Structure formats: structure tokens, C-alpha cells
Amino acid sequence: MKRKEKAMKLVFEKSAAGRRGLRIPKSDVPTSIHLKKEYLRAQPAALPELSELDVVRHFTELSRRNYGVDTNFYPLGSCTMKYNPKVCERIASYPGFAHLHPLLPQLRGGGMLTQGALEVLYETDLMLREICGMAAFTMQPMAGAHGELTGIMMMAAYHRDRGNHKTTVLVPDSAHGTNPASAAIAGYTVKTVPSDEHGCMSLSALKAMLNEETAGIMLTCPNTLGLFNPHVKEICELVHSVDGLAYYDGANLNAIVGKVRPGDLGFDIVHVNLHKTFATPHGGGGPGAGPVGVAEKLVDYLPVSVVVKREDGTYALEYNRPKSIGYIAPFYGNFGVILRAYVYLLMLGREGLERVAENAVLNANYIQEKLKAYYDVPHPGICKHECVLSAARQVKESGIHALDIAKALIDAGFHPPTMYFPTIVKESLMIEPTECESKETLDAFIEAMIAIAQKARTEPETLRAAPITTPVGRLDETKAARELNIACL
Image (cartoon, rainbow, N blue to C red):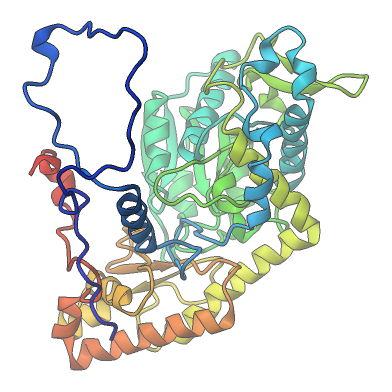
């Protein structure tokens, strides 16, 4: 077991009166304060007083305590925390891209000064069409959930245009929580379709729930159990039979990229999490990009603007789209993330993308196979890019929960997997190893999980005390969310 890390002083505790890191020269022009007296501080702000070296060492020490994909294995299920090639970062930092002003294409003559950036948007659109089997993409949504809302808004526009009276969107009970939220924000009533005994959305339940009021279905495939629904084409056909639309949540696209195209399965709308599938780390809430692709019958509803290629080979922004759902994001989306994905796609090519899916699936099944003797596997058999274990056995035998196992993994040097999701599995531990990790890393993780399973039987109290190697011990999991004034304590 590692030694517990030394507690770190706050920057205020390191403060020494009179110490400075910067001296601002006295102003050589007249200055005055225009704020009213009641808005001024009665006393100077209690800011820490530190030298430049103090500040550098403080924040360097903080950075060394960060945990990320650049420092260790990060098997967070359903979030694809994989290695991001540094060449993507380097190209995204080129001044020609990084210093580009977003208003430049809209200024007179500015379009010709941004041809490289517009070409990146245009070419990424074309590559995503090929990967997903869609007719066109909008690059604007800033994240996966934003892409969902954009897709649902286009679904609504489609039905309005056809005079359809549609009120309901169907969502499986294993769906990401953003799916029902996006449909509800767009004004639809959400109905949950239960899973069958195999962990996939029940086909018989779907048939019973489909009717003329069904606007569409939102489906993640493979789902959050890592299972590919063998009836997915039939599901799309059933939804189409009532003039509904099939929405593909692309959060798990990395499991099938290069192998299966959602459009070929019958999906009408798809969003792609570029920050999960094609480079760019997304921990900590961003940045992200969730381009949305549509089938031919939905192209007219894409948001404005759209990048087009003129006959002379130059690129321009097109706004004249009467049926568009309008503006859904500032400018042209999160260009930096799109650029990283563009580099990643060019670098891997068709063969590389196929290997991404193959290795992601291989790694997940390797972990599941090695751990199935130690943890329950609620839906045994071949999984896709992630596997879901259950700690139900440990709860029954010694009262050890998934939370205890996750905390013990921290002491073993690993980031915990996703816990208690999907909610249809009791004491779930959702593990997504991604395609990037070596067999040695996977074996080390497996050994840690086996050791924890053994401790659950022989020394359960040690697991309940975990983590003991971190600057702070076990935190209250919900205190910060339930006591909103905690920052003031």
C-alpha cells in the first residue's frame, strides 16, 4: 500500500506579509476611482502575499496531484477517457488556427483569409458522413448533449413540416440521462422502454408502445451495458412505420467505428462526440464537440451556417436555408476540438479506425473474462467496448459495496470506473478500457480488482476505510450538491 501523501498547505497558509512576486510601476498618468463609496471595500482584500517562486511551486505541486489520461489508466465506463495524440494538440496550437478570430469569415474579404479553417470544417463533415452513413453534418453543437438537443429540434421541425401530430419520444431504460432530458427540453413527452432479460431494449415492449404519436426513438448502440442490440435494424423499421425518426446516440460510436454505419442500420439522425471518439480529453466538463449528422430527408433543417465548397474550389458560409432550425451555437462550433478530430481522422485513416473498434472491444472482453470469477457479470457473453460488473456478490458476502471497491482502486493507483450506472444493474461497476491501453496496464488493473475482491472476503474493514493514500480520506459523495453554501464554510 502506498504511503499517504503529505498534506498540502493552502496558498493563503503559505502567505508571508510583505512578500511580493511583482511590483507594478507607479502610474505616470492621473488616475481616479469612479466607484461610489458604498461599493468600495472597507479593508484591503485579504490576498495571499507570495513570491513568484512560491506561486510557481504551489501550482506545480497542485498539477502533480492531478489524475488524468496522461498520468495513469482511467477506466471510466461510458466516457471513453483515452489517450489523445499530442500531434493533435500541436496542430491545434498553430497560430494560424489558434489566433484566428471567429468573426473574420463574416467580414468583407475575410472568408478568403479563413480558407484553411473552412476547409477543415468542410472536410471533417465529409469524413463524418462516410463514417456514419449520413447525408450531411452540422459541426456546430458544442457537446454530445447539445448535439442531442439539435437533433431533436430537427426531428420536431421535420414533423411540423409534414403536419404530423407527434408528442412522444421513446428512450430505453439503459439510456444516458441526457437522452430523456434533451427530448423533454424540446417539448416531447418521454416514455421509457424497458430492457429484456438479455440487457437490450425489449422489442415486444417497443411494439406495444409505438403509435402514431411517436415522434422518434433515441437509441445508444451498443448500449450502456456494452451490448449491441441484434434487432437494431428492425427497431428502426418499426419506428419508420409510424413516420417516426430513429436517433443514434453516438456516445459509444468508438465500439463500432469503421465497422458499422448508423445510417446503414436505418438511423436518421446521429450525433458524434468528437471529444470521446476522435481525440481531445473531455474530463472536467469540456471542451467538447457534438456534430450532428442527418439523413437526406432532414438536410433542409440543419442549423445555419453551413460550410459549402464553391465551383472554383474555395469555401464559404451559407445562410440561405429557409427551413433551418436556426442558430444553435456561437460561430461554427468548437473549432479547436473539431480540428483535433480532423487531425486524428487523417492520421488513423480507414484501417486505423477499424483497429480502434477492434482493440476497444478486445480490451473490454479481456477484462470481463479475467474478472468474471471474482465479480458478478449480469449479462455474460461478448460485450463491446465496455463491460459492466456487479458487486452484488460482495454486498451479500461481506457488505462491501461498489463504492468501497472504487475507493480501494484509488489506493491501488487507478481511477475508479463508473459506479451505479447503468441503473438497471445493482451495484454496477462500468469499465471502459478503451483501445489505447497495453496488456500490461490491463493486467495490473485486473490484479488490483482481484486483490480487492479477495480483501472483501478477508479484510472488508480495510476497504471501508479506503482511500488512505490520498491527501484527504473518503469524502461525502453528495454534500457539495446538497449544501450549496459549502464553498463558504
